[in-house]
Length: 385
Image (cartoon, rainbow, N blue to C red; front, side, top):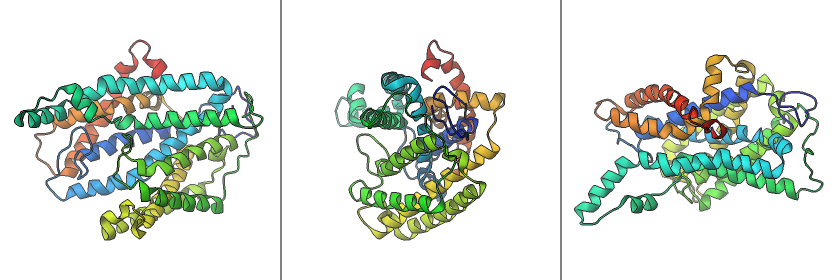
């Protein structure tokens, strides 16, 4: 197994625990919860419970969503890929895919059959009432199929597809054999020229992709297909980084430069949004090219910075961090139920959109981890979560 552990060579049987990657995954999971809490009160009502903002602070949430969306799921795909090559080396194709199917497929089924019906009750009631006023009967199964999307679980769907494509590539690669992924770890991260080249290439591919799939369009139930080039590219980088030990080789200067670049790109992205409006969405416009460039620089810069920051400052775990890390995946699966429930509970609270968002996030984040404990205590749950 090759893991980015900062060692000159990596044995296929070694299984070092990358605590800073675990902690980074936990932080990104918190961002997922915060992101969907922001959608609840934004001008983008693409959530199971939403309140239209009654003041201008909803626009601030729109900007938060735009900036967060530019990087956080791409970073999720990269850190998920860090462990894929070593897992394949240890288990082989069949066992690797079987465990991927268990860990990704079972939570997806639980979401579709149990949790999604729970979070859509409110929307179904409104749809049923609207249909009844027109003299139309709307059974739940019909509403469920008509409104079907995988919701936040689109991530596990795409992750399984990427993992299956990796298996296919390994099986078709010349000279492939089990354990052949054990290669010397260079411990040398890419230089500035390579990183800039990757960012420019990602921006151009994203721009071209959005000529066909602009931002705001859903394809096959995926809420953000306009970002698929970034997701695929970051997953691929994670695979290569795992082989070559790149995370351990990133310098502190690279992390600082990444954050600085991301800050500049974030400001530029907001300015493009303010000046161009919906022209940034795609269809081959110049603002779309500028937005794709800013997003790519933001995604690469933040990911670099976070990897270095957590490696240097977050590479240990106490009791609390171990708990948060162990339950992060469960939180990802169940957090919509918590957000929707708390959102309904706060529905009568008169407050600006930003204030309600903060209140929802402050209540929901710890509640998600509290709810994850009894879920993982269920028989057999730890094999899945």
